Image (cartoon, rainbow over all chains, first blue to last red; front, side, top):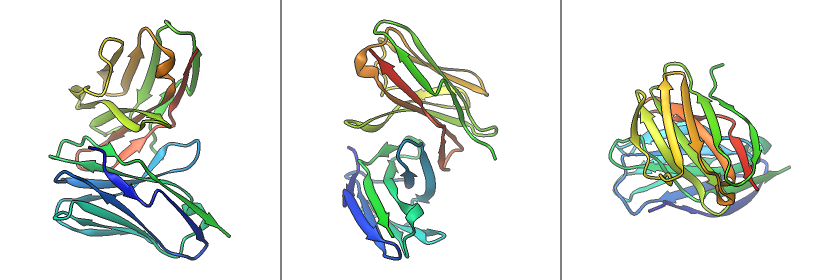
Length: 110
Length: 112
């Protein structure tokens, strides 16, 4: 029951915005977002806990709709450093155990 | 700047050999995870520990894989015997309950 991410790939110019979606078939306790650059390890961006909150981190923010079992990651005024593959990780039941989505590859060009 | 460390970073071995990967989690983190990443399967959880106790190893092929945490500063993942299909990048991550997971640099394993 891997979460589904959309789109699979995004190409942006510097300064443009993007939204990445993560959808689960199961009720969620939390959603994590990570970014992974080629040849490197995933890097934690943020966690959204049950409660439908929104969080922000510099120009990257995310929302969590518990009812719809969905989360979205918003990247505004994208920078070259935002390039990489973005993964959502979903947790059910407060176990800390994550199932990762298939990833969204984001490329930002000058 | 606290980081998760993993050794070795790269390992090339022949089919049938034993492989041991080691991880030092961030001090103060009570949860340790082992993941495997391949192009085909993506990022899969193999096993994880909380306060050194194994909580779930359902993602591991149990006949050949084993994960242990002999003390709070060391987690190990062993494969015996290794097979070509085990070729992947293995990540260790640590964190606190209800917090983010912090990944080590990974061990790139190639089994020939």
